[in-house]
Length: 241
Image 1 (spheres, rainbow, N blue to C red):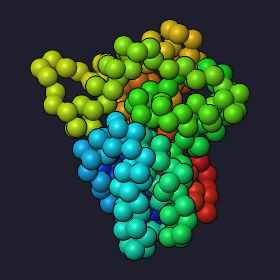
Image 2: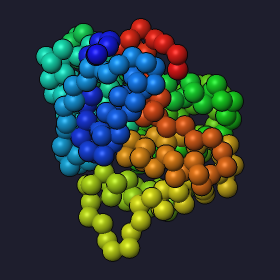
Image 3: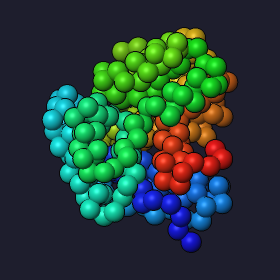
Image 4: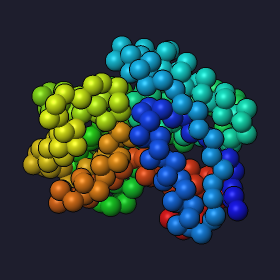
């Protein structure tokens, strides 16, 4: 039996992250004993989004997300998520459209930052794309709650960006390249730099959550996981988390 409002997901950014979101929504509903969710997914081409994000083209990013939001609204969604971090650089441009469409759009950063606050974190290492870090919405929210962001150095961030593109399927893999190993290595460097918690702020890293938790000696909070929990709360009127 399906339960709650229809949840719309702007996906494709990349495909593996979209699968992770869908499976997480189903799993969260079942964990709460709510049956199955009503979910509509509209995918956006990862190549177009990567080009727009690299160029810092907020208008193009907002246009791609806006197209998806319109489709989700027509399909009956009332709660919506963008299943990627970097497009939130254009939040101020596409969030008003969501409101006009009657969609309750949940920002990806807010549930995760609140979770870190509840854990008592003070220095938070951020695993994210360069575009997400440049946008600054995680740093602003962390600092607003008294937490210090810790980010990779230049070399580490370049390696992380390459690994993320490989995980997203937006670039070819060279022989012997292990994207997961790179991500774990960068996260370990952040812990060595004093981070007492790690924030996974990239949906393409989310499938590596278990590997990260097994390798690191600090709490790991995933923005995607917290995003999904907030969406289920919104779609069902709350419930045990």
